[in-house]
Image (cartoon, rainbow, N blue to C red; front, side, top):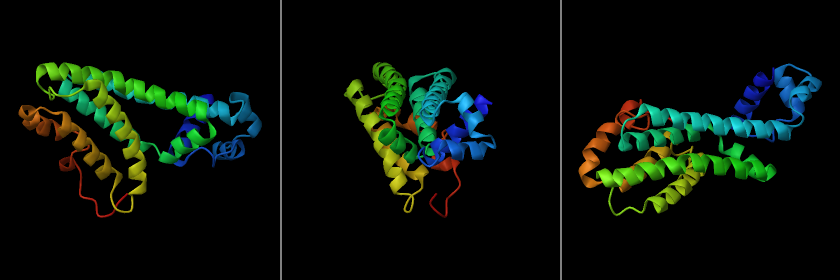
Length: 213
């Protein structure tokens, strides 16, 4: 039962935010008594903490899969970008807004955890890719990673504001293209363009959209 409760809270919180869902509302959604809910989770705060841990665990698992499924630095950086695009598309900005406003300790922990998971990976592939001639030799890897982390956060917020004009897919795609074409060595551009065709943020793999999401 505790897993069912956590999975339900995870889905509701990450899709619709936290504040709307009181313990009464959650118990009603689950079809259980509030007493039963409190038997497994002592408070909504406790439930929020466990949801944050699940968000971090899922993100880390996706990153591990990207590590093990790709064989070189260009493929890995593209897979890391794909993980982030998928994460941003699946997680509503209101989740982080509610978290920051009402649970600042958990918000700080989660943002730090997510940043650490991508920072070490991107830094490593950039450093190795520069040596291999895949990425521009003029790059400052640590600075690039810091800028990327800020961009991911801002793109996430920006996409939520632009849904009437552009789809989230298009906002994230253009942001990823700006980053990727900025770090790629000129000689490696043809290979980048071939690899992009394999990923979900490539427009060639998607059907045209008539309306924004």
